[in-house]
Image (cartoon, rainbow, N blue to C red; front, side, top):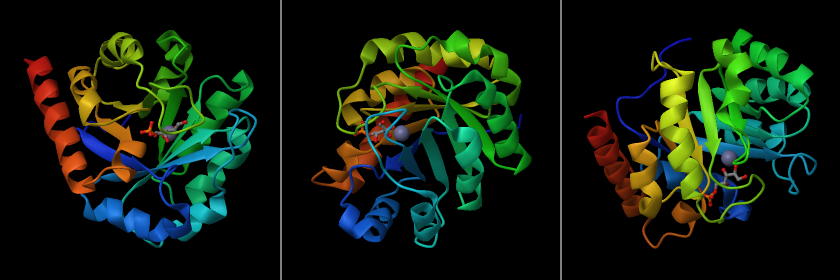
Length: 233
Ligand code: DX5
Ligand code: ZN
């Protein structure tokens, strides 16, 4: 496992709730506002009750920015589709550990074999130890702090408090794995998120509904990094 931990907490813009009629402009706007990644939510209408982008869309927006793309697959068949999102230009692909067990290890192996970062995401109700069988294959742990499927939901503070620090301490004592938080990421939740030692904070509606996206990105980073530094003692 390569050491993926950034020295400072990063912000990834989820484009799920941006103005999809101007997708390219919205990605550039997030880049100009100082985000570090673009978080691409792929939903199939089965694993979650929503339907979003296909790999052709990801291939098209790949031309818009050089920022890394983190694909978040909320789909029942990541073994089939994961490689397509690698091909489309995603630097990392995270699938859900709750999919059919026979898919998980092969899908992670395919992503890594392609030289990309492989991640597992957990619904709020799924315990961290569901990831134990795959610990050797994890570059990213994507902790959901909302039920997957939609942006703009309320942040689950209890999930963050129980899972974030544990993810670091238990799953990855060597500290090489990247821990991401996804769902309700904003300045108001950045302190709890940073305290858990989170590396990447996904933010969708807070950024795209902000009066001032630059200020929101800067606030999330400042607050999360102050909490992270305090937590590291
Ligand atoms: C939800 C997605 C999240 C979501 C984040 O299923 O995985 O990435 O778009 O959006 P906010 O920040 O609005 O919760
Ligand atoms: Zn997501």
